[in-house]
Amino acid sequence: MSLPLFTSDTTLINGNVGFFSMNGIVFYLVNGLPIYSHPESDIQAFRFFISNLIAQGLCKKTEIRSAFHISIDFVNRSCRTYATEGESGFFKPDNRHGHCYKLVGDNLELAQKLLDEGKNNCEVARQCNVKESSIRYALKVSHLKKNPVK
Image 1 (cartoon, rainbow, N blue to C red):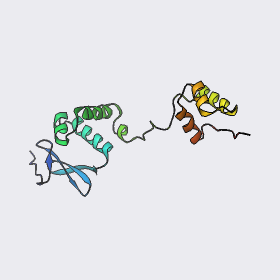
Image 2 (cartoon, helix red, strand yellow):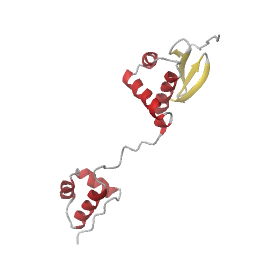
Image 3 (cartoon, one colour):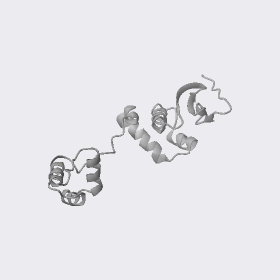
Image 4 (cartoon, rainbow, N blue to C red):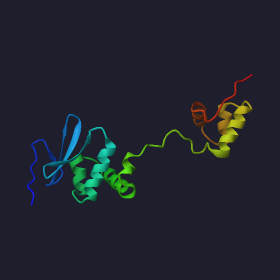
């Protein structure tokens, strides 16, 4: 049987697990021994670790929710990510931005053809069934090239 010893500045999640923050770093303790730490601003590491605590049976979802004052949906989404993707699900690069999923393949070729014919961005967007901002972005990142007007 272990005797949990926690300092006075430790916030307890339950009788065996606690955390405290010092110099911008959050430290997690089990029975008084440090087991993990991350910067206060690192939300992904926080999501990973609370999911890990729950998966190992060291804490319950409700204990995490009340200790950190977060929603149960936040906890559930984190646990789901941990269960399906593991640790890599929290630390992979965020590839959601910077790509128009409608402006690919034949649609991209059509947009380039229309630009080559001298059509403006608004006309190209209308004929390709995308937003004008998608055309502007594709031009900005060089997926499309606008020919100079002669």
